[in-house]
Each structure stands twice: as structure tokens, then as C-alpha cells.
Length: 196
Image (cartoon, rainbow, N blue to C red; front, side):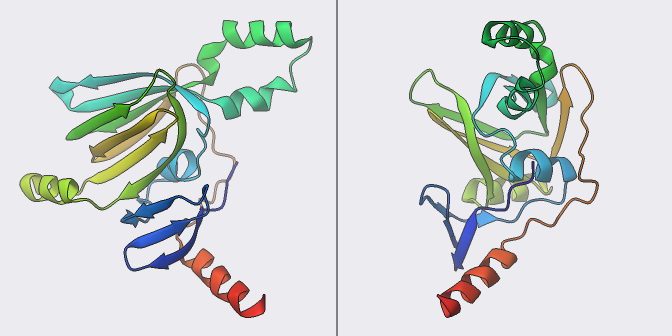
């Protein structure tokens, strides 16, 4: 379920995106973490439901519980029976489709929502003044992740990321995690401009 990165052109600190024509300012490349690359950078959770957010202050940990629509869709056609039976199976086994995303050493969390709908749309890493201040004050490398949801967005500044399924094991079929850099898209864009 690897999707190619969404950017088509970079000018200065602005990456022009092919995602609905959205312009994303100050995006930076993905951190070197195979789980971040597989689950966050490739929009694995696109259209998935964010069930809950829990901020554990004593351990500076943010935990997101997400129900993966990709996993449900993958299993839907393998299941026997009609729509009613399939929905019942998914409901009875919902923990097989749920993931806990752990953002450790979480120094900042902000959730802006403009309604009750809270589906995960896409996310990106950004360079921000808040990130630079926190890095300066703590002396540690941090990451600023912005998650765009159907009702707003979430900003998370953290040091480490891990992920677990509520029930079952995580397997990444593509053992070789590709480098998700924007350079290949810039090269493609330049090539197409010269040949179209």
C-alpha cells in the first residue's frame, strides 16, 4: 500500500502539492523511521477514523487510536456473506483494524476541530517556530507533525514514534523501505515540463 509522495514542485520552503491543489508551507522530508514512512508518510490511514486521543502528562506521551479503513477494505472482499454479515464481522472484530500510535516525549499537542467528524485525511512534517523553540529549550531533536482531519487539524511535536495493533501483529510487506524524498518528483516535473 505504498503511495508515491504527493509533491510536484518545490520553490524555496514551499512545496506545491498535488493533493487537491493544497499548498503546504515549510514541509520537510520524512524522518528516517520505517514505521513513520509506512504508516504516516504514505497516507496509510487516509479516511480512517480517529477514535480517541489520550495525552499522558506524567510520561509526555500522546496516544492516538485509529481504525484503519484500508485494513477493513482489504478484508471486505475476502469475507463471506452479504453486507450485513460482513459489517457484523468487522464490528465484532474491530480491534483487528485498530492501531495505537505512540508519540513519545510529546512536548506540544494542539487539536483544532470544527465539527464532530474526525477522519484522518493526510499528514506532513513541518519546520515551525514552535519546533525550533522546543528543540532549543530541550536540546533534543524533535519532529512537528501536522495531521489534517476532516474537521480541522492536529499539531504534534514529539521525539519518538511507535505503533502497535490493538489485536494482532504489524507486518510491513515491502521489506525495503523506499526513500520518500521529493527529489524524484521534482525531476519528473522538470522532465514533463520539457516534453509536454
